[in-house]
Image (cartoon, rainbow, N blue to C red; front, side):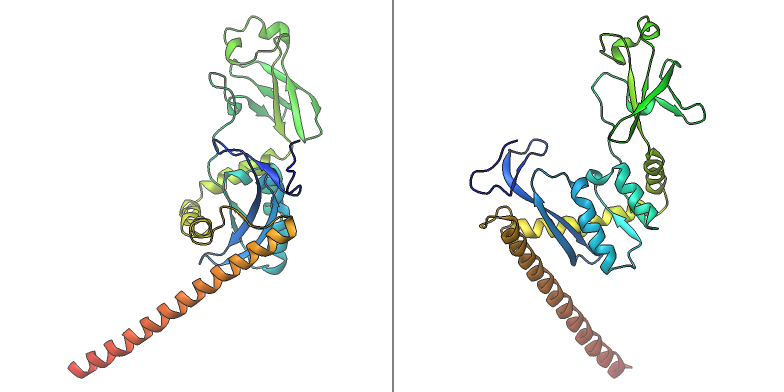
Length: 263
């Protein structure tokens, strides 16, 4: 593992085509008006789905009235889906492109038969259950002597024994519920509000408040710095909203007086 010599508490951040750098990641939540509700700081090499629990538990403890939790695709995992649904809340998550090698069958093409506890491959062959690994995935394996003569073997497996292994999570049902929720009326419009709220928060923080980098070292110092920045952003937003309300109220008063004077 690569460790920074100047700040051992940070982590090596690498996402997509971004340049690798030592950084901290801020897990942030806001309400429908764009006010930042809470934030947690983690090293940059901690995945969003791993850092989710701390922020979620703190938010739901303080705001029990939360009924919808809107998240991006990085949080679309079986554990998060189970946690939110079991709490009686509705997770709103986007479509996530299936993972896998180009030119190979997609994971959804291997259909799980829950009654017989097996998987049916695209050639209608049976993959039998073998074991459940430590990550909570049930493993299903094919018979090598059957797959050896399969015309689509090159699109299925590169295994030397011609065996195909398919994994299905034990909480797969929760991800299927998330997909059903995604297709429910109103959920798409609710998810689209992210670009007006949390994405705007991140954009303002980076462009207007110098949060593309930090001047501090250590998780504690960076956390205090980020919280102070977000507190200032909330105060600015509150001041703007109060000013807009006053201007609107003054406009209504002047308009009503002018209207009645004419009448």
